Length: 416
Image (cartoon, rainbow, N blue to C red; front, side, top):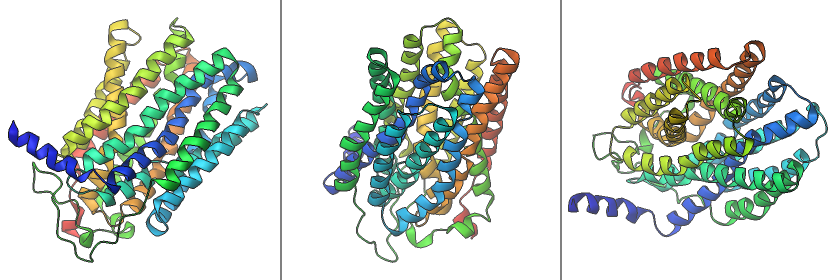
């Protein structure tokens, strides 16, 4: 027991001083990514006022995710070249402006323009820039550090969804969106400008620092990293990209339709938003626990476990909305999808090294439109059949396929 405590203290000792402030800044900035969760409790309000079908509203995820996807490679490039702080600050400023515009929309065209703006801002404040800078600041406790930083999106999603629904219920949904804009301006922007910093340059050939005590994996050899061009020639890049596409297809499809599905089952909007918020809020614990575990097991095994739990959540979904299984789903889905944020940068480092992590991760984020397809697919199934049964079955089959594919990952640096 004392040995484990000493090991934990050793890891935590790295997370202090300037590194700690950078982590806090990244956590706050990741709350910006959590702003995107507001569109789910917003859905019933906008659908009713603008007279939209569910498919029409869900189609708003197309410009959002397309903009986010296409911007991600550029975000990764800029995070490496000019620094994450400037990229994150731009995202916070853009979120402020976008939600002021969003609160004034009167048509479906305005909705789609607003959603495209949300996508651009989310790309700037998303996993790519944060994952790159946190990975550069940490070594022994990289998994825990990523978990802490990425917990911000779920913390933000939980708090801001509650803020929105509270303001929208008391006043109206437009005022609720303005309250979100104020958070972006007064909280996110200062964090990006004054807390996030780039690390000092490392030696050209640094001494390898093992970050995975339970194995011989070395994820921190910046002097032996594959660049994007080399990574594109490996099977692990395409396996991880395909799994990421399936993840977004399922994740976005459920995220966009969970509240609507529960309301259709007879639940009130407030109760449905509560369960949605619990699934989102659980991500705070998931990322912290997942980060701690990821520092102690093989990073390849970590991503396999995460996608296995994600597949299990989709199986449970087939028997929803049984009251008992609802909490099982909330736990499995709410734990697995946030932990994916933590294990992906780690497994990318394991397969390709850290030197070009931002660029490689940014290129993989071109899989983001899979989320729009998942949301539209689920909406179209509902509009045609009056239920989500076939959509949920498709999600399950794809999740199982992605889980199996991850067993074929390998360290591509050894084969370069």
